[in-house]
Amino acid sequence: MKALIALEELAKMIACYLATLWLGYSWWLFWALLLLPDLSMIGYLINTRAGAWVYNLVHHQAIAIIIGIIGIAFHQPVWLLTAIILFGHSAMDRMCGYGLKHEDSFHHTHLGYMGKKQQVTGNVKDSRLSGS
Image 1 (cartoon, rainbow, N blue to C red):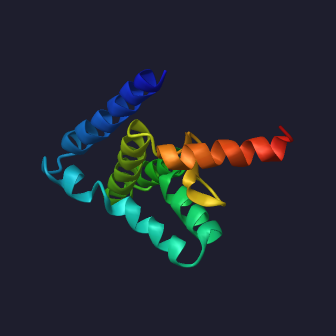
Image 2 (image 1 turned 135 degrees about the vertical axis):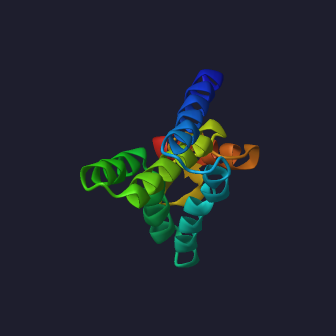
């Protein structure tokens, strides 16, 4: 299942890249801007709750779609490009197994725990909460 989801997210990322070309941007612009959404991790300098909120706002695909709709509706190419970058970045992250963050830890995502050590810790933590 993970491979199938990764292929789906790869297709989304490629579609975003092709959209930038179709809109007339240079071939390199998409790749140059692709990691900018990770600046949202700066919220983690405050605490994990603030970090998760800021990170999730920037990495939520529905937010990217809303920004894209605004860009189209108001003929704002910068907003549309922003939406494409946000959506493409989110797809890339999910393709690599990174997901939206829970408030308790950067490593706890909607796709599970990142990394083997965190996964073991997460399972122990989860089993304690369930009373097992």
